[in-house]
Length: 407
Ligand code: PLP
Image (cartoon, rainbow, N blue to C red; front, side, top):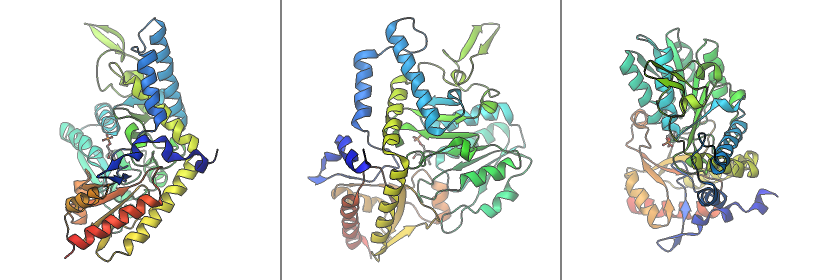
């Protein structure tokens, strides 16, 4: 079946909602995506027919759920092209994945005087956990700046990375500017100095084929809800050579080998990092979502979204009062813009009244806003179901907002 015959929109009931009697134009996919019916059906099916806690049961339902959960781990491993299923750790989302890593990696490999490198375009969840580690251990956080167009200033990477650097943390795609960072080259540069790299894949996994072996990153985090799966489920991929050595993050059931008051030993990966009852329904639904996007195929998804992005940029550039924030060499997922001096929130309110859902504000990237010297932006972010009709309704609403708000 071709993607056109597949008729993507038909799989998302919510897209047929009316907002203030107008068709919903959902351009807030960077915040969260809508869920296809197959994902919703799967969750309902599990709760109606199979629900039971995983891993520790002897009975039929528990074994069924456990099998489905571990099969889902295989689907995620295959999707990311991980070497083995055990390198896939289930978390609540990107934020928890990075907190897990900052704690477990930090406790295992870092000491006073060491350094962590992040970039100026990171989401708060790839800054604050590292700041917290630095505070705990007496370490220093160093920042790779951006250029004026919104690309990373990679010329500075060599001088930033030194013998004290313990890890480099970089987003694959900026959630504000849409910049696609050349993570494969960045990883190669860091590895030349024996420095491991975390890639924040929150905004890349929904839009492109992400191959962790090809990128050769040591860790990658992403959130299920941004890739058509439910909230509360995410992934930390890590190379076994690190995960085996890292101390656990949370203690509790499932992550142990043996518990005694004289000392406790830990389970093998991935279970060492999955204390307590996991979100097994979320895990199984995540696999369903990944199978859904794989069925459409990233070749089509990337091409489709690029056409939409270029069309949107072209339309917005025609509006004299609109300034697009950032002009990266390679863009995916999002376009940020401002209307003259109008507050982004006011623009968002006017768009909302036209049925258009966008996000406004600092997008959890306050250091980036500081660098750009702006309080926030209006962000349109794209998904597999958006089409030209969406963009036309959106641009029309932006024109109305520009007429009302520009001075
Ligand atoms: N990293 C990036 C680049 C993001 O865009 C986001 C969310 O917008 C996150 C991390 C945090 O994701 P979550 O809130 O799902 O943990």
